[in-house]
Image (cartoon, rainbow, N blue to C red; front, top):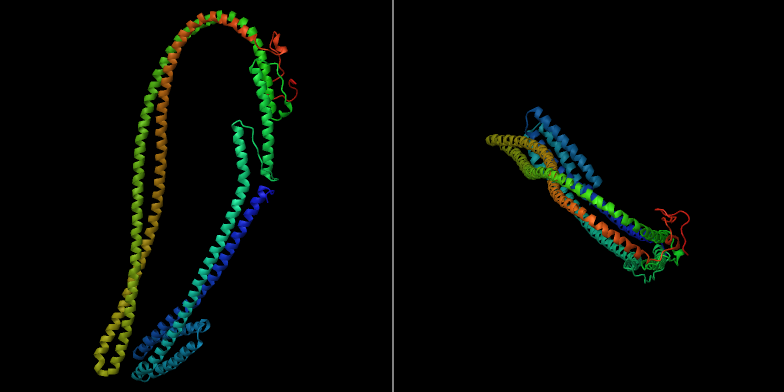
Length: 583
């Protein structure tokens, strides 16, 4: 794998990591799918069976209640209403029973026992209804002595069915939890293995890339320090191997070029401009510019020294002109001093205005900060109001639960009043007073039910209103957050303005200092101009000395005796064709 390209190495490594990741994700998805099926079975079967059984038990209680009212009620319209409610509950009871027979996976004998009991109860119900038309008291006795026990037996059978369903649901839940634990262990094992393999591959790939890079880095540091005595041992057919080969070749070429260039420059530094290169074949690419520059330097210095020799004669003649120029410079310096003083006055006025601006910007910054703090405080108060609304909603839910309890109590009271009325009826004339009391209790229970329902509706309306208020408050809080952000942004911009004003004030102070320095320089120039005239004589003497010094250099033949500057054949850009070859 060492000779593979780096891109291929990275591709293989990441493909292995991707495969491991896909395997881990696939195992997780399979486990989650199986777990979801278990939870779905728990909800759609066990949980629904319990709900259906509770609904059927409530339905049987309503059937008993409606049948009791039918046996006691004299009003035909009331009897029809009770009969309609009774038929509705029987249809619902039949529908739930069919669902149980289709979905219950436990002992079917329990359902058969319930079916047997309920069929007997239905037959007795028909008997009670038939007897009611001729003898109400006999029908009421049949209701209490024969029909009610059959219904109780049916309810007991339903309870057994519910218990079996709960046991199956518990078993299903236990299996689901165990499966989930196994899934977690499998996922952790696969993730750990994938992580270990990933770490191993990463370490191998990192070492395969960083080791040659470190060797090259050390070599590059030596080259930066001017040490070309380096040894690069890494060899490979990949990109890093080719880079190491190129680095070795580069080092050899650099060493030869620098050695040759150093020799050329050293000879010229010693005054010998008649010198030639010994490694022209190494000056390739950009190195050609280096050799060309050395040659241009050689030609330029030779030409310059020749010109210096000729110019020295002209320096003496120009010394008189220097004296005249010095006098003109002295006069101009006086005029500059007046102009500089006027400019200093103007700058002082600008400095005052900038300082005022900086002061105003700082004040604006303080006010912007105060506005941001107040907006933040409003936002916090809005959040407190939202928390209070949530507390109102929770309290309303608790009140709703209490009202539900009141409704259940009213319903049980109604049933007790019904039973009391039945007992009063059985007592005959002696129980009439007790029957009146039972009827009043039943009326009171009905009123309690109606009142609790009205209260529940009012609480529901309150919850909706609180919900709307919460939404409005949330929207307001979001708006306040935006306001705070805008205020903070404005404060930041004001900070920048204040900082800029301070920087401008500092800059103007620097300008003022510079003008003062200019004024001092102008005065110095005036004195210097006076001295220039005296120096012109000395300049003539120095020109003679300069000619003597130039005579010590060994110039190339074409520049030694030239009376005008020689054409070197070079331009400021790299040549596209011929250049001077000194070999």
